[in-house]
Every structure is written in C-alpha cells, then in structure tokens.
Image (cartoon, helix red, strand yellow):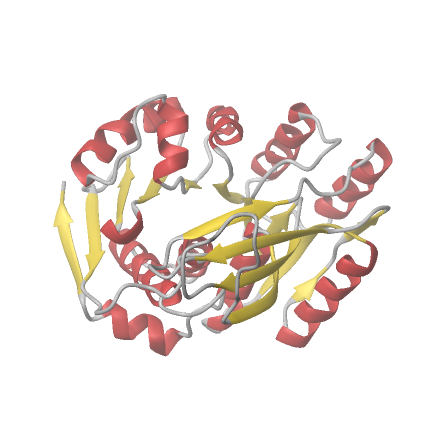
Amino acid sequence: MIITITLNPAIDRTLVLDGPVELSTVNSVVKSYVEVGGRGINVSRAIRAIGGECVALGFTAGNNGRSLKNALTALGITHDFTDVTGETRTNTQIVHPGGEHTDFNEPGTAVEEEDYLRFIEKLKTYLDPKNLFVLCGRIPPGMKEKQYLKIIRIIKKAGCSLLIDSDGDTMRSTLPFKPDFIKPNSTELAKLTGKPRTHDPEQAYEYVKPLLAEGAQTVCASLGHNGAIFVNHEDKPLYIIANAGPVAQSAVGSGDAMVGAIAHAYSQGMSYEETAKFAVAMGTASAKLPGTQMATMKEAYEVYETLKVYTL
C-alpha cells in the first residue's frame, strides 16, 4: 500500500493569462481551475489517475479542509486526515503565456502539539513493512523540525520504504535516515548543495553524488524541460528526456506527477530503469495538461514511446 503524507495541504487555484502581468491595474484571466493540492495530495491524484491505490494522511482545517476531503472522496482516493482548528490554505498559481508559472503560497494553519500527537497515533496504524510512505511538502506552521524528523524515524524504524519530496533545507535534514528515494527539482538541488541552479544533466549528476554519500538511496533530480536524472548506489546513472512535441501548457504539478509515478512503479516492483522512464513520461504528460491535472496511464505511455535514455 502507498501512504501519502501531506502535512500542509491546500486548495490550488490556477489562473491562466494570455498576456504579461501588468501591475497596478486589472489583468484578464482566460481560464481558471480550482483543484485540491499540496504536494502529497497531488501525488495521490497522480497515483489514482494511473489506476493505483493509496491512502492520504495529513492535516486539514475548516471549510477548505472539508472541501478537500470531499474532492478526494469524489476522486476515489481514500483519506484519513487529522482535523485541526483554522483553515486549510489556498495557493494561487499564475500561468503565463509561455507556460511559465508564478506561485503565491499561503503559510497554512498552525499545528499544535495535541494535533501532532493525534497524527502520530494515526500514523502508527499504517506501519507495515510492505507499505511505501511518500512524505511531501513543507513543514506546517507550529511543527518543529524534530517533530518532522520523528515522523521519518517512526516510518523507517518500522521497516517501511520512504520517498521524500520536500524543500531543500528540510530534505537535507532527512538524509541521515537513509530515505529510499528523494526527488529534488533543479531549484531544490541547488539549495541542497549550495551550488548554482543547473539544468545540465552532467552537472546535476555531480551535484547528486554527495547526497548519496550522505544517506539518500536513490535520487531523482528533475530538470524541467530537460528531463531528469536518476542515480542510486547500484545501477548505472541515467539521464532521461522525452521528445513529445509541444511544450507544456503548465508545469504546475508535473513534479508531483513524477513522484506519484515513482511510488506506483516501486510498489508494482518495476525495475530501476523502468521506474525512471515511467516517472519522466508521467511528469511530461501531466505538464501538457492545464492546471494541476494528472495524466492517465494512456497519456503517460504515449510520451513513454518518445523517451531517450542516456547513461551518465
């Protein structure tokens, strides 16, 4: 079973523009989308879109929290959230004519000590060595880093597999626990390593090597339109890129689609290379869709057929 954990979920609102943003005046929106979000929620949606099953855990609050849970139920995604006081945040993405996006993310509602302890008790009911946990996104307001790391410690001590997709500083703190996968994007990889941002696969490979030495078991570093690299301790390092036609409508959520594909492939026992190829195909296919829509298995495999695989 795949268990996704979104400690700071959101309602995602996407606004699509047909021209550049003009400050201090009214800007016209040509399309808008409202979807449930937060990295782990998007991962759950990706898993469901390709026919997989998962359980979504995390914190929800207020009317937005209820809307989020209702939306997941409608999508057929099982959830078991811990309710807290306040209001689940709303994030806004502005998609520019060229496909680039600008994000405005609210901080989220605070998690108190009592809320955290209730979540831990719920988490313990899902501890099974056969389960894969996917821990995504930012630490919510009120939660200390040591509390976040305790979640990881509990999961790993139970013998469960763990995939982490979080901000750079947070991700670095998890490396001593030897996560099975980490998935930084180019911005997060730069923050992790203290080096300039790069989309060059050879340079990214050099950035990734120390992360393996620090504890990561497998690293997928996504490089935007330049594909992704996959590196672990045993297999040959891979660079994978798709040649799948026009550039995306919106890259929002494409990284989460990759994480969902990795989790699904891992749970299905796919090989290292097949997992890597499937992840890039899913991320690329999802980037071609508006908002944070997730590609179906059919759409992902249409891209899969265009993949080019190189050894670094």
